Image 1 (spheres, chains in turn brown, green):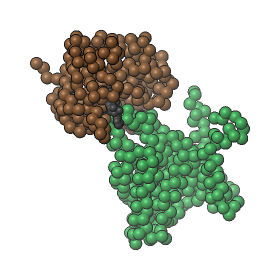
Image 2 (tube, protein in one colour):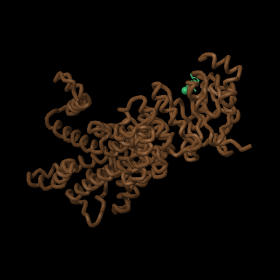
Image 3 (spheres, protein in one colour):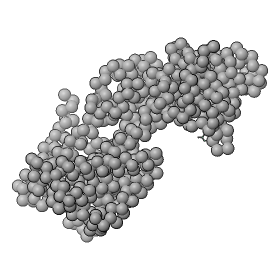
Image 4 (cartoon, protein in one colour):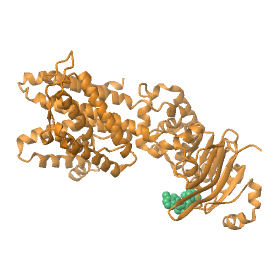
Length: 249
Length: 310
Ligand SMILES: Nc1ncnc2c1ncn2[C@@H]1O[C@H](COP(=O)(O)OP(=O)(O)O)[C@@H](O)[C@H]1O
Ligand SMILES: [Mg+2]
């Protein structure tokens, strides 16, 4: 058996009196498309915050490739290949779509202290950023400030930035939230196209998309893992059906 | 060829500013050369805040510490015969840089109002520490024994001091407008626009903000050093929170996020001060009114003209 790319052991996080993540164990295999589902307030975003380093866990361990990254700052995790996206798109509102993506490129991270030559001389980076925008269908919006984009376009820009970061492990927090049926289908296709190339943990409520996209599904309820397994076993899981799927079925 | 009109205004202004000493001589108003020098120096000091606010979105309310700190140290060094600018100025700047690093490490963990308050608190501490220090002359301030020697220039000549200040201010403005287009400038602007996202994209936000803070402080320090050359005195006012406030007002009224904002602000404020001091016994009342008008100019235009404004 191969060892997981990402592993969590006994992860805990509380907001004051509220135990948002409770003694969570979790494994993510390389190349896997893993869906995280659960009712609102289950702790899904909090979990992503712990994995990306935005919040420090109260207890437990996070291992990437067997290396302990529990206390590693965010930029070290990005350098190690973990990048997240946000449930509410976090963009640079007054910068162009192109510049939003360009800032996400590994080249910009590496050259962050370069003050002696203009960013515009790095044509390869600009082309790369444009290619990512093209990939998510924003080729026409390259020059528009992010603030002028529609909700659906912002979501796609958010994804383009996450992809452009070059991360091997993507944490996508509700990439389909607030999209129309048609836009959701497009976005789901973009995510499906990442299979094999990247390891993905994504949060999603629409079970049709979840069952179609995911290799494996973890059900989170009140900060605990209720069930984890392939789509068929989750569909068949009695407790999940009763406690959770029932709400939608 | 779209860039041409773009360049026209700065080039014309630069030419005018360079020739000011001759205009004043021609008008037999050499007295105003001192004012012109102060405007240029305050423009440089205010520009340091435009860098801080415009690039990484931090509103510093303690820049008097760097402005005055460098001013005091450069004056202090002349007491011991350190007249060479090549030695005394870099030393004063190095001190400012160390001070800014320490203050930055503490204050950059906070944002918004907290950042404003903590930079103010540090500046006040430095103000009182220096004024309480006997060697710094207390409330009287510290006189400059003589202007620095900076061959081949002769800074004892008021015109040469003016030109030096102008050249340094111009160089800083050009450097900053270039910086805005470099990867570092883009990263700082990213931090201003969305710090959280920059962290999520793998930028070590804190050290990058510290770098911006230190560079900004060095510019303020350079302005302080130049001011002492002009006034012949490092005074507690240079360290006072009113100086921090004045610099902030200059940076803000000229347009905080514009690189040239501080230049505009220093011109408006210092010229208004000079002019109103002649007109009225209460210049500060009128300056206050002017600031209000500038702060609410959008609103004001709408109220008076009944337009939608902007
Ligand atoms: N910053 C916060 N402060 C206090 N409570 C929070 C905070 N963020 C989230 N919570 C609470 O933690 C629980 C988990 O939230 P979250 O991780 O956002 O859930 P999900 O993403 O699954 O909807 C919820 O009950 C939520 O109200
Ligand atoms: Mg959430």
